[in-house]
Length: 346
Image (cartoon, rainbow, N blue to C red; front, side, top):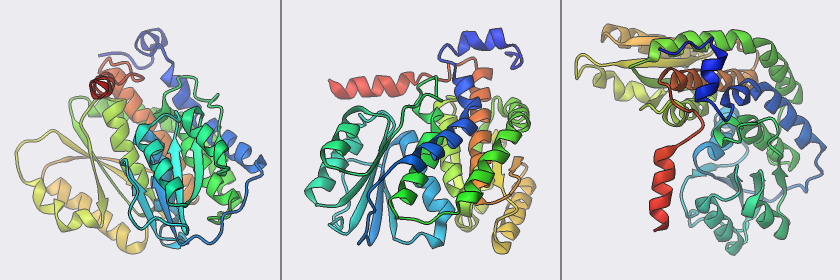
C-alpha cells in the first residue's frame, strides 16, 4: 500500500497537485469571502422563492446554504440538478446559476429558461459561457479567478463554490449572515488543518476495501451529500449518504442483510445538533453497532454552524483524497465521467 507520508510517491499519482488544492481550502474560504465583500452588487428584492441550479461540485454551495440556514432561510428553496426549471418559476423567483467551469450544459439550459420566464438571476462561475450570460443580462455575479485551486478541479475549489455563494446571496440582500461567525470559522479552520489532515489520513486507511456510508443531520446535511460525491469522484469508490431523522424510519431495518458486509458508517457529528437530533444520533450508532457494522466518527469543534460546515468540508476533502491515493488512483481525473460525456456527443 502506498505510503501517504512519501511526497515523491504521492506526486507520481497526483500530477495536477490536488494535494495542494485540498490544503488550500481554508485560504479559498478566506479569499472568496474577502473578494465577495469588495464587490458592488445590485440588491435583489421582491423574491418569494429561490431555485439553485448546478451539477456535481457546482451545487455544493446550494446544498450548504440550504442546510446551514435551515428553517431561517427567508424563502422556499429548491435545488435543481437537471436541464429544466420547475413550472412555477416566474418574475418573483430567484434562479441561482452555479457552474465552476461556466460550460455545464444543464445549468446553461436553466439559465436560458430563467431568462425566458423573466426570473431574477444570480451567477457564480469561474468564466465560460455562463460568465458571458451574466454580463449580457446584467445578473449579479461572483466570477472568481480560482487561483487558490492550482489543480483546476472544480470539486477542489469548494471555498469559491460554497462561501462564494453565501457571500453572493449576502451581498445581494437575499440572506443575512453573521460576518464575525464566518470570519471566526475561517480563522479556526486555518489552525485546524494539520489536525484534520492527520485524522483524515488515519480514517482513510481504515476505509480501504470498505464501502463508506455517510450520515449527518441539520446544518451538516449538505456536507453529507458532498462527501458522498467526493468518495465517488476522488476516491473512485461507491458511497451512499443518509440523513437523520429520516433514516431512522427505514434504514434501521436495512442493516440486517446481507451478512457480512463491508459497510462503514461515517458520522459527521456536531455538538450544535439539537437535543432531539443528538439523541437520535446516539441511538442510531447503537443500532448500527448491534448489527455488527463499523463506525467512524468525525466531530467538529462546534464554534458555530459556519465553522462546523467548513471543518466537515476540509475533513471530507482530505479523507476522500487520501483514500483515492491509497487505491493508487489519480484523484484529479474522472475517466468514466469523461467517457460518458464523449458518448453523449456522438
